[in-house]
Each structure stands twice: as C-alpha cells, then as structure tokens.
Image (cartoon, rainbow, N blue to C red; front, top):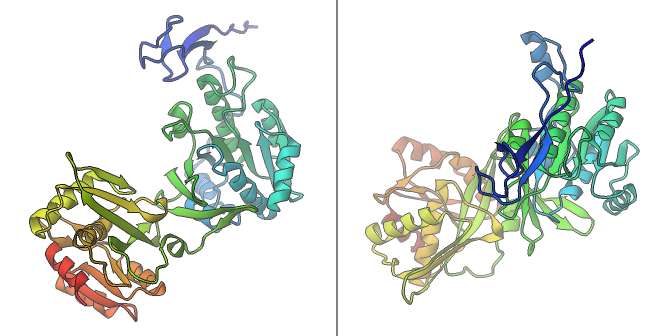
Length: 462
C-alpha cells in the first residue's frame, strides 16, 4: 500500500499567479508589492479531483445533453441576456460594483426558478439566513422551493447541493470571494481560494447537470476581481452596470457560450426591487415640448433589440488647446467625425471645445450612430435645433460619404412606434433604397442622403 504524498508548499503571487522560488516583497512578474503568499502545490496528474467523472459519452449522447430545455427564471430581461434561460450544467458568473443590486437581481430570479425548475439553493457567504430572509420578504421573493443557506465553506455548500442534486434547479453562490475551500491555505478571496472554489463548482455543475450562478466582485477599474483564469472556467460572464445617480440598471453578457453577447437587459431599481423595462427606448428619450439645440435621436442595435437613444452635443469657445469630452461615445471616432465635418461639410469646429453625451448613461459602439453625432454637433455649431420627430442613423466614411447600416427596417419600425416622423438615412444602392421605401412604416417621411453635406442640408430643411 503506497503512502500518500505530502503536499509541498509553494510561493504564488496573488495578483498575477506567478510561481516564485521563495518569498519576495515585490513580484518579479507584475511588480506588485506584498502579494506573494505560500500555498499548497496542486495535486499530481495521477490524482483525480473530487467531483470529476470518468464517463465517456458518444456524440449522440452529447447531442441529447445539449438539447435539454433551458430553465427560464421568469424575468424576460435576464432570460434574453442568457439566451433563453439557464442551460443545465452551465456556470454563470455575475459581476458588478458594490451596491448595484446583484443580490437583489439573483433573489428575484431565484423565485422564478423555484416556481418553474424545482428547488433552488441560495448560499450566502456575506449575510446570515435572517438577513437574506428579510430581503426576500421586502422583495416579495419568498417561496417554499427557495432554500437559504449561510455558509462560507464550499465543501459544506456542495454537500447540501449534492444531497438535493436530483431536485435542484439551480445553485447560487453569493459571492465567490467570500467562500473558501478547507483543502487550501489562505484567506477567502485570494487567488488560490478563488481558483479552488470555482473549480469545485464547475465540477459539480458538469457532473450533476445543475446550473450554478456565482457572484463576483469587481475592482476599482471595473474588472472582475481575481485571476483572469476565473473568466475562462465559467460558461457565461454577466456584467450588472448602473449609475449611482440614476435608477437604471443594465445587464450585459461579456461572454456566453450558449447565446449572444450583444443582448441587453434594462431594469429600474425601486424600493421593492428591480422592475424590468420592456420598452427602454421610452426611458432613454427625453420628452420635450420643443426641440433642443444640439440634440439628435438615433437608433442602435443591442442584440436583437433596436434601441432609440438621444445624443447631445455642446460646442464652446476654446481658450488654448481645444478639449474633447465624451460620455458614451468613442473619443477617437469623435475626432474623425469632426475632421470630416470640417473638410466635407464646411463647418470649422476643430478650434472649439466639444462635449458629447449619450442620455441615460448608455454607450454607442456601432458606426450607425455616426450620423446622429455629427448632426448634433452641427446643430450646436449653427445654434439651430433639428426639426421635431427626426431620427438619423448611418455610418460616415473619411471621404464624407454615408454608408447604409444593417436592419434598417427594424430601426424604422421602432421609430414609428414611438411617434418619430422623419428619418435621415444613407441612400445606398438604388435597389436597396427602393426596397426600403416599399417597406417604410406608415407615418415616417424618408429622406436619403449620399454625403455629409447633403445630410445636413436635408436635416435642417423644412
């Protein structure tokens, strides 16, 4: 009978994961100070980790596993971002700044899962059962299938989950930085513990076919805390964003093996929890009695959903080096648009301070918003408001030409539904323009332009 090998310690940087020969005050790899700690060496290749499976499946069996129905949580915005619901055996990491509402979102989603998918085990490493229960009562999120647990040892959490694996619809761990493994040294939240906890949760999810959702903290620069390896181990990474001064919350997917990463979920934080915003275009558009100078409405795509947003621009006299301040717009692309406006439209704006903002804290990432940004700047420069009910979208090239954007019909239908009456669009090929006019929603006047100068002229014309 062979003797068990005694685990040997090693020195690992908790910031970058580099292994050193001993303790150093400064990491030789990432230059971080006081981040090197001692930990046990990983098991040898011959040792089998707990929860692993030696079952070899054929391609037919794998197809049957992939065809298992998703488990919707009852919140349409969450299910849309996930791609239709939680996939059995998947691991989802939810990140966001402190106080943004991650626990609130998961509790409300847990109730929907408990009503549809069976038992849901909610393990909290930050709060007691009484504290989580009081929040459930405030959110009206109580259900007999929702089980609460206050535990920081991952082995105890997985023991309770394994006993109920056949009835378990989902396992939620809040958060991965507060849970630790007894088989590893170090405090909860360090690199070794996060890696060990995540590996055990992934093994449990794959072996029992139970979806696991983990909460992750973020650093000051908005990145998920812990090693980058954490994002590679999970199947989906969700980001819950928002502004402290606003009640709007946004749910995005930065990684999703079972769906698109372009979908967007919009919520409103209220006293009784998060409320889904089914029509976010109305929430982001400003309701004015009269048009404002330096404002233009555009249509952008967030996954399968067309979204109407308002772009605002303000030009002011510059004293010295002109400033370019952007919120929600790429500053490099703004500089390009201003150069095009100067060269091909005859509006000299390069010597002025330019401030551009997207209302509601949203971001415009696709080139289709170029035309709206340019028209907002032109409106502020001319000190003349665009006509009411106008929408513009299209990509702008360096030669001043306008290029068509995909899914024009869906954008125009969303504009017509919200009462907009005039659209400035790139002309494009004659066949495509003819098709667009034939499928034009009722109540919208279409004006096509081929150049930037022509678009500005058509926009301010009566």
